Amino acid sequence: MDLTRTDIYLDGAWVAASSGQTLAVRNPATEEIVATVPAGTAADVDRAVAAARAAFPGWADTAPAERAAALDRLHAALTARAHTVANTVATELGTPLKIAVRVQAGLPLTVLRSYVDLAAEPPAEESVGNSLVVREPVGVVGAITPWNYPLHQVVAKLAPALAAGCTVVLKPSELTPLTAYLLVDAIHEAGFPPGVVNLVPGTGPEVGEAIAAHPDVDMVSFTGSTATGRRISHLAADRIARVALELGGKSANVILDDADLPTAVKVGVGNAFLNSGQTCTAWTRMLVHRDRYDEALALAAKVAEGYRLGDPFDPATRLGPVVSAAQRDRIAGHVARGLADGGRLVAGGPDVPLPERGYFVAPTVIADVDPDSALAQEEVFGPVLAVIPVDDEDAAVAVANNSRYGLAGAVWSADPERALRVARRLRTGAVDINGAPFNPLAPFGGYKQSGLGRELGRYGLDEYLQIKAIQR
Image (cartoon, rainbow, N blue to C red; front, side, top):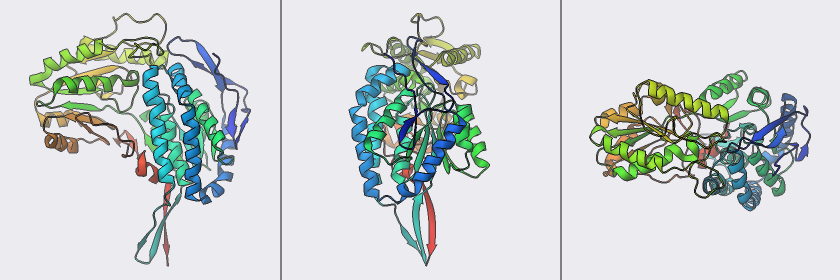
């Protein structure tokens, strides 16, 4: 099936890109090219930003109820495409279809629904002395999104920006651009005014940098690597533009000595391997009390060995490929270095037989990882779990906080109050206690080099609002 798209979306219409060049999209499970999309240019970004700038005053002045109604129509149009979204993500990213249905297609709809409700509420105003404090949309937003959750990461930026009254220029990842096209199809069907949303696919060095450096882009919202986030910050800083960054992670799963160990390990391994480990919040460091360490390793190995690699459309598949050959090779390098640095292989590794075609990586568990080693410090972004023994609660907190990242984490204990005390000590933007469910209304974002700002819920909406004081 050919999924090729030939145009970019500017000012409410599908139009030709300026270069005439294309980018190939591969199915990572088969290595075959399944589509091409236009390779956008800086000139296309100029056109998109001009359209967004022209549309901004009208959209910003639109009544909150009207913006909410437009988002509601988008929710309906995207819901009608949910099956197609899941199949497209399974094709261009390799996420097993049953997970793609629930997470890749389902979660963005939940997030979008929350912003239908939030958009209907006028921005809060307050009186401070003789000042009226009001909130206004920040302006034109450049949204630069990654490949690992190609719909969710766009919706987490697009929905609050539109709810706030901003207009948007979107650059999806060149590895998984097809899902963004489905979203923009839904946006067009929902009848948003021309110029409110614009789509320019392309590479980071060409389109991403043009957006980040553009003088008429008021804010850049980026999700991706810390290195790229640093580059975007530098480009935006030249004109003092607002930046929101959701970057890397190396999250710790702290399993205390009184935890339900089988559950903690099973859920922890599942979290580390979700989406083939290509999740910024993955709990990739498992910290276990030394008295229960050997038991935890045996449990982790058994769980990991139950992850069947294969075709994303096969219902028996639990782990699909990683996104590209480069990503596969990068992960293999991390595993080799982790073993060379003294790690002990307990599951997976380089000698496990893999499918003949596709960018597959065996689900891997490495024990005895030095907390200061590269495997414990660097984001692998693959199905690789590092297990580290700790002597007590204080040592667990110290190891968990021994990272330049601070995006997510977990604590397990039979005593909820003890778990809460430990969670408060972790220098990270989110902590799950005893496998608590994800909350799409809670603020999402990181400490340290995991980013700036927050996404989701009211906190995500606030990122796209300016604060003005009117003295009277």
